[in-house]
Image (cartoon, rainbow, N blue to C red):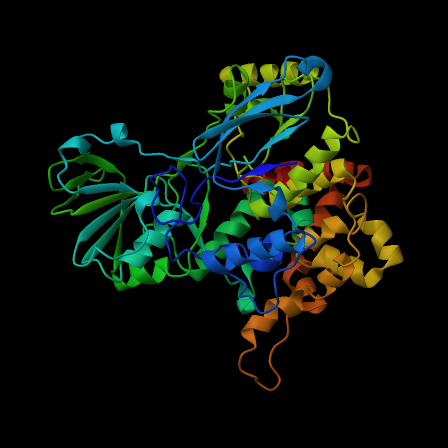
Length: 523
């Protein structure tokens, strides 16, 4: 096994083409939800951490499992091509380059882990007059610190996590910060009710409710919860009607808007030499800098055609991992996913599944069947019969459970309640931490049970820097029941109402139900 790491991974310069982040970046998934499943973060690490802390964790992980000897640093992968006898062996010829010297080697399997964030997306052609603009233009990849923006009027285009972070940081030094968005977004805080990490509220209990309740009820609940913190419409953040709902994590953006250090704007219609004209007709003069936080594109320049083009279309990646066209499943795409949760935890499960497929311990459908299904789906999308959901963010627990089921590592909750009620309670009502996927099956870890039962201790440890008598404790079982008891009761009633025994009653009452309730009933 060999892993290649590109050159100069942490240098400030991006001349080597590597993706980098701004110095002030803080993770938006808490440590217990974003760790490797058999290697918890140290208890003294903060719940949300700087890039340096997270980098230290990755180094600790590599050293703990003695992985450094397998990593070939400062190496570029030039090409990955099928071996001449691929149909029989499934092998790949890989050409790499280290310090100007190329090397060719043959491998039994390959995992491509370059992810989503490879090339900056800078859609200048979408902005009329941008080439007339005389100010500074840059992509967020080039942004590192607010130094150099003192006293300037800065326009940030794009409201994702990066756009929110950059706008907030610049608001402390720039003369004025304008934040432009086409669609709007929900803004979440890193902390939930009681101040606990928001991700720790992502439980199987909550997932069960989401699966049972009608979508219109769920959307109503979510909108109500989001606007309970602050009215998004009043802050210029509400999502445009007809656009897909999305959310970012930012603790300071609403306050910056409230204090006037960040001004929300609609999408840019046109640029002049020194100003920006917006879709609502307003004009902002004397713009000094424009920062595009418009995301990234991914690519596989080292793959040969037609495999390269096929991998670019997620529809042809079986479970977003295996290219459908390969007669031998010996190449896996790892991390090319958008997820409502930890990408690291999901990529680990993808890799666990991929290695078992490589070994022949897990099977996937034949390529002919996968290609036929993907082609049929593509045609249905083109005809407008179904929607293309390939770019939608996946729900965390369902995707993780699906992968774990294929590995054989998905916890069996009913059996767990019989064998170990205390652990089962934490698994179902507590946060769905990655340790759950080490309780059983291949790769089972003896420390998984203890890690789950002590996850709240590690969450609270970095907060307990000042001892306070009778301090509040982490969410208890009673808290979970208080929080979700009513939704579960409603879900249970809906299940009962769908039973044959009440079918006759439902039919008789149907005409008397108001239209808005009928919508909720049908979902």
